[in-house]
Length: 426
Picture 1 (cartoon, rainbow, N blue to C red):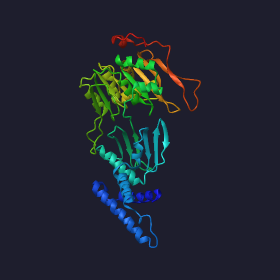
Picture 2 (cartoon, rainbow, N blue to C red):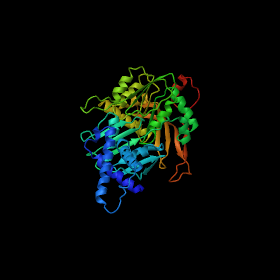
Picture 3 (cartoon, rainbow, N blue to C red):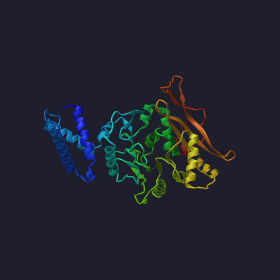
Picture 4 (cartoon, rainbow, N blue to C red):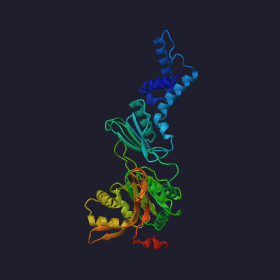
């Protein structure tokens, strides 16, 4: 039996089984029985069609039948084409644009996969399995859903009628091993000297904000920074989807938001969790990402004795994140004077680290900036760039060569370092 023949019969059986009205209510044994019956029907059709010759179906032996039956079963109960992609440990992102177009990211580069699903129905069945495992549902009345798989992968699904070209699935996978500073150095994101400085800043409880664009490695960097937190501290992490992999802390509390149910009730937001965390006697609060009004609560936490807190946010530069923080605070406290907001930011945030994904797809640390307070006369937040990425003349259009270097600016806010007993000059 040829591979093409096997593929054809598997495809026909999958289409037939997937369109079975009772498919979602069948247990594994019932599904296997249904597949075998459908295969018998295919053989009978072949017998009636071919009278003078023997078709491929009529020559099926026991081994062939088992292979076809198992392949159809796994495509329905398993993950089908997606399962083959997920087992590749080098794949970090999977983007499915309808059943025919699958894109994968490996080593920071995006490729179009040669694989595709047999039909829109097959993709919908796999999506249903994903969503049901997370205790969620997706349908026409609730066509957008975010959830997390057991291995920590983050999944976003957009279904018809919102998605015009069919079901859209975006999956971000995370390595089983947490990112370390040593790996960041190896990847060229930071230098060993910068790593030592960051270690001192974290230990001295500077409030640090990591910013960057989509895919710049903010969560990865935050994971690495968390390795510097002293083991004897009580840490509370707050995230939309649990992605942080903090391993070295014994007294660790991990909180995750919850979307509203089908009745529109029961939602638990980042703001709810930050306020609850403040009653849990935290020494540090780590917020995976701030996107809206929760920025106000985060800043207030930083300003009320919870030094050493860490968070991330989307922004294209260090100055951009300051503007975005202003906007986010206004979402949480409309009508608050802009001057008061800027003073709040200036007194709460100590260090901003800006990450970027460059033209060669490498992820680099572009700037490390300290906040020096609020300039009342000019009405701006004062910043001081400590480190900046400088590109070498050896760079090309395809390869970026450069490194993070210390500027000539002296550090202006060394108070927390001295309080922590750290006398080394940054």
